[in-house]
Length: 187
Image 1 (cartoon, rainbow, N blue to C red):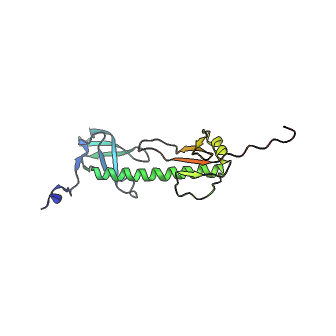
Image 2: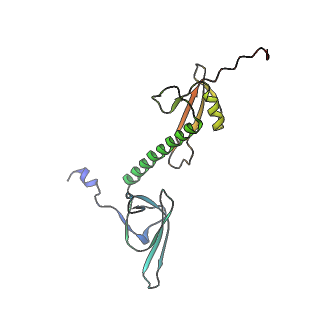
Image 3: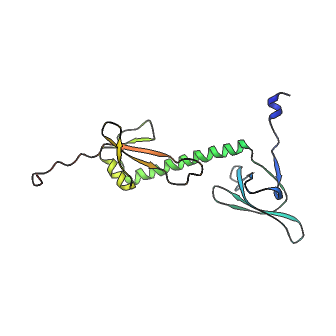
């Protein structure tokens, strides 16, 4: 047997329900249609039912909110390992980016913002002249100089919590609308 084979653990680590602690991660499905994923134990309460059978009530954290496991016998639960947690974290970050990009699309659609051309870098959006001020007003954001060629920018950060990392931030930039020339009545 090689060193690599000896360090690989093919059997999942299990823990009886009555030995689970707050903060443990167990592999579960939220519904029969969901994939198995690590869920964090939020609450555990061992007790004996009316017949004296040892049982455990659990509350697990899920992306849709906490769920309660019905009172269980002290059955074993498969614990999540580091790879399970890393895969779940990566999936959550990908979903967060998708949500952030969707939120950006809604902002741009609602504002009716006109972009000058397709940009290769999605973190910088070049706007048609004059749009930067209008977008700043809609977002109640500050306009600031950007670059050395007369551009101004508004930064937009996706709404939401930062529990799993920084949110998407996009720099929307362009030239300001030219000042209207004074009419003869104003001069």
